[in-house]
Length: 92
Picture (cartoon, rainbow, N blue to C red):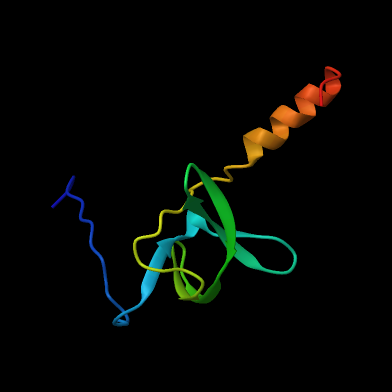
């Protein structure tokens, strides 16, 4: 029928007892992949081992536990920008 749309999910593979996180929480540099895990009032960098991924999620093999809170963006980015601004203004 014209004008109708549908949205569906197709489960291609089901893997029991795994930890899956949003891909936005995974960061990388030249050598490793890592996440920012909440620690007290801030965040700490933690290396993770990714078994597989798709366009939305990453399957974590090592480095995280269920229930840990992750940052969706680099929590240190604004602090680095603030330091650069302070340096241009003569502050350290």
